[in-house]
Image 1 (cartoon, helix red, strand yellow):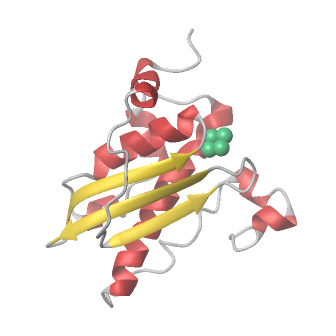
Image 2 (cartoon, protein in one colour):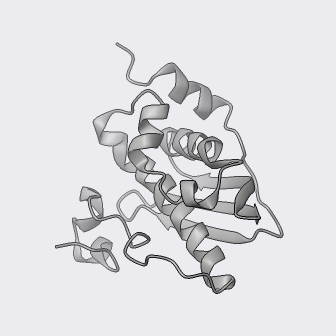
Length: 154
Ligand code: FES
């Protein structure tokens, strides 16, 4: 069986929504402390709807495929729905990722949440801070004191 699904390969080879939105309403960044990969998400929001979304990812193929799929999943959707997007949903939409690559999809969820948080903060909108806290179950994030900094590691 192939290691990567056809969907992963498709989104890796032809990533959707790559780029920058200069006048974005929300910008968020997430980094993986272990591999050093970084993902940045730009959101254009109007009337609580995500009208446009772009990403820049300096990372592995799985991270690029995850960013591409995640942006497709939230484009045109209400921000309330985008806030609920999980790395699990991204992985499922990609027809799965190898277990060692699951953490790459966490970057997508975290970057989107960071961008929404930026939008809420800029506009004085109240939100549930718990929901936007860094991912708790990213095993790699809690491996070393350096990588655990700022995370909710037990
Ligand atoms: Fe770093 Fe995939 S190996 S995000």
